[in-house]
Length: 165
Image (cartoon, rainbow, N blue to C red; front, side):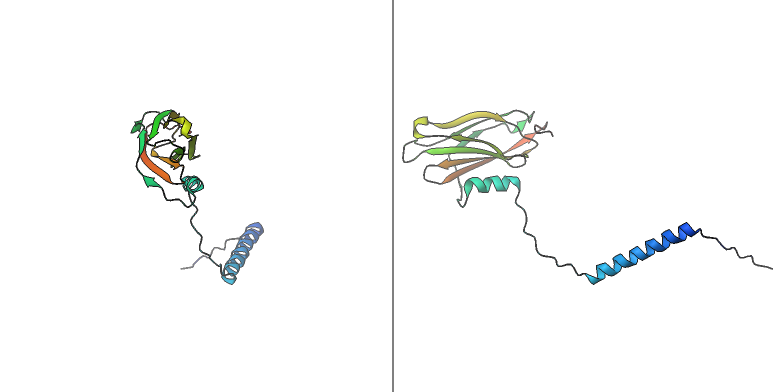
């Protein structure tokens, strides 16, 4: 019984492409072995919300209490979420609310609004509407005349996104 051997003829173009690819892989392999990458620890990047919070607070540690926040627990439309904020304060020259800051934890722009007050304001209260992109926390920071801050936080479930969501 005779065995027939078949030789496959490779076109010159295929041979050159294969040889070039093999040479490139070998060069990449040698380059990767020759260079040992130096990995430096990378500090985590604070979120936009954390950056906005730090910008307002600085080194201050906020206290809880005294903030009345009326906002729906479930917002059927994130495009227009009503809220009302009131803060107990004597509103005297020595002790008053200087500002109320409204922040959202997930919106593309976390700083929603800031409202300024003086003792002549009489009350530290405000009502408005905001957009919320999806379910998230709404954070209220009240800046007092003495440099302290009061914080309040409420989760709002959004069923239809308001910031393109």
